[in-house]
Image (cartoon, rainbow, N blue to C red; front, side, top):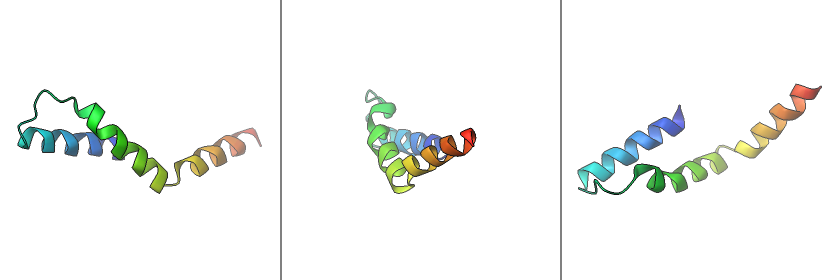
Length: 54
């Protein structure tokens, strides 16, 4: 859900700036990676994987 919100915000900003030919997915990728790092995504994924085995 948060990644979809990032996509929508980036698309809205690009459209408001008149940059219709720039793909929003390319622009939003760095924001998604930064959000994943800030949200401590690797720890959440590795913890979930370890817990699924035990």
